[in-house]
Image (cartoon, rainbow, N blue to C red; front, side, top):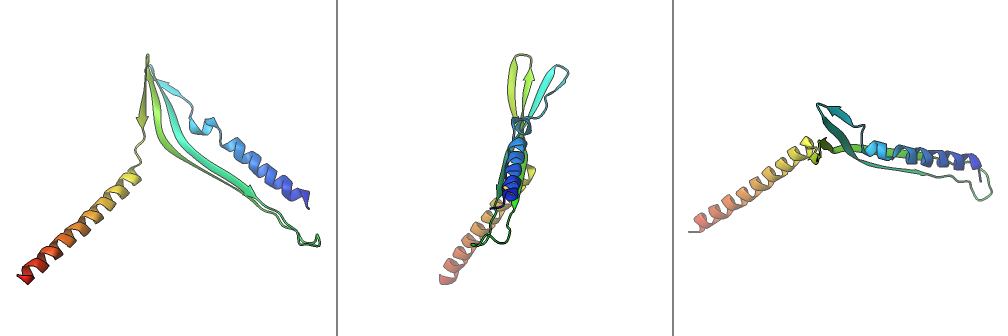
Length: 123
């Protein structure tokens, strides 16, 4: 088996481990007018790899990959002795949620109108 592929996979996993740290979750705190703000994010990531040869030990394979995703979730706000959590608002998620509710409401309204129309035509 080719050890260079294993080394590449090991390097990829090591890079993934280094990238997914508490520093990625909690940003650098900053202070203004006596208030300290510590931003926070949801961080997800993963790594993978592979290698291979044919049954006779010929040919070479390899490969590795790494992915990282981070989204803001809010911030801790420290003012004097008080610590509060301020969640981040994902505007895109709110817009999609409103659109889903509107489509559902239109479908229900259409069903109601069709049911009433059938009842009046039968009478």
